[in-house]
Length: 336
Ligand code: ADP
Ligand code: MG
Image 1 (cartoon, rainbow, N blue to C red):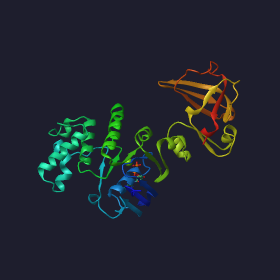
Image 2: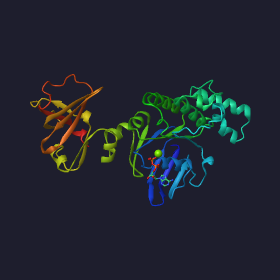
Image 3: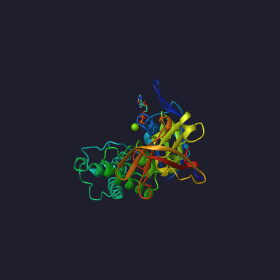
Image 4: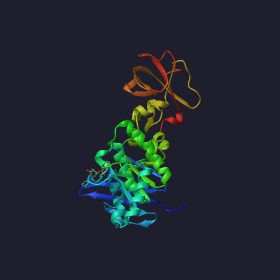
């Protein structure tokens, strides 16, 4: 086992009375694509700034590649950050922007330029070196910011909502490029995002953050399909949350349960549950055709409701119509 590329040990950060980060333990493997996912104000940026060295923890320890860096300033850490607003120097050319960190470190001009061009090629901006940032599109500017962060080959790249300023289709394309860039460079990526789809599709592992604490860490499928807390279940997408009496009625056990809308099968009242399946009956209260999927709202007795999502309507019994009494079935294991 090699040591962790990034490790936080019991890290807390207070800003006056506000506890932005609350006892976080985190360990990233070298070459991992790791995401911090959480709503605005949950402490994601503060966590990144603690790793970068822009903030010092109130208590706890930060390590990079097995070395304690808690008290080291940013320029003594082998880490670069890409911010949402790119923070490019407007009066410098693209090439000068990318080569800037090398200039500060006293790298001679010929080598600076060669490495800046190489970094620009990595992000597919060959030939854009002489331009000014103002002459680039949003996506191109984002790539310049990436090239600038990658030019001196940091061990860890921190990305704070790097695609947040791009429109949706460009964002999806840049997600693929970022993932590809991480694979080809082998650099450890720590991405901050509030977009669950982004975190789920790009990451090897995800940490869900709420109120300065980590609610759950795991591979995307695990976090999505086995949410450890009600917060994670709610934040990771549409789900049916059942608590208290509703849990007892629907799931048959006390506690707080989550059942994913796409895990529930709609069937005829007459269809018996298969082995290991749980079932309730209800009335079809609403059907919404939402582009690629259809969303059913099923009213149960006692004002309980379940949402069911189908990608594909083939195989749906004809009895599933507005106001009809139908049967809902799901695998026993699909209620967490
Ligand atoms: P996120 O990036 O998840 O939106 P932040 O890390 O920016 O969250 O903020 C977490 C909490 O810490 C928020 O309540 C925010 O207001 C507070 N905070 C962050 N930075 C500072 C600061 N420099 N001074 C005071 N409060 C701060
Ligand atoms: Mg932030």
